[in-house]
Image (cartoon, rainbow, N blue to C red; front, side):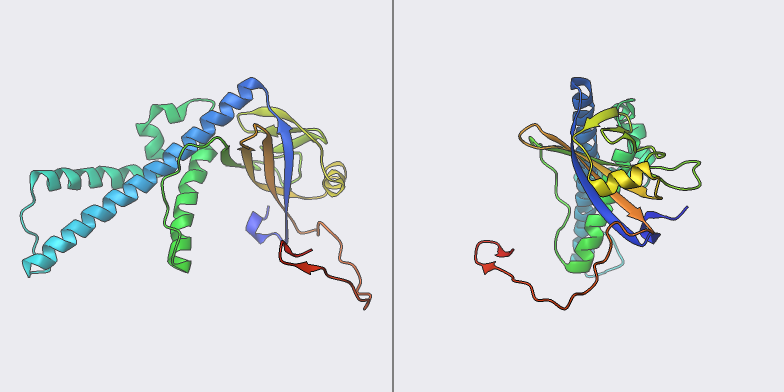
Length: 248
């Protein structure tokens, strides 16, 4: 089975869904867990940076770049914290072993893995474009977390045979949350679902807006185009330009 990045066409789907009260609690748990893990990595990165910077300054001020001056008690504690922190964030499994509440059955392990992946992705983007250093995520009235669709033993990926899958045009099954009712699907997605056109689901983002409405965003991939190309007619079209929204 091809990886998501190897598929030729990609398409995004966003639908509204209606969780039960228990599912809302689970969404909040996963949002809090993902935010906690991300902030742990941000804090660990800052601690490591500060300790290394302080050590570098001591070396330069001593006049001997390869000789370290004696460390104070506070500096020793910071160095030990750095060693513990480096060990904690070296593997995703370590942080779940240290914090038992992250191993609660209702928390999706892929949500935690995505938090770590997003942290490293933020640093890669920073090194690439020069801004966007990872910062602490604050509590918000709008919740969101990200999980993945996995195809464990399937030879081909469809919309109805992964860990994130459509039960029918009105229901989706999500990891940990179970079956949720959705508002409806676009015709082109229904066609792929009912005709079993090979389509892989990548990431699934669960979001609660500030107005308490819940949305599910899915990343889809396929080697079969989602929309057809229209033939060029060589006819003219009109474009309305204005200052409010620039292009309509």
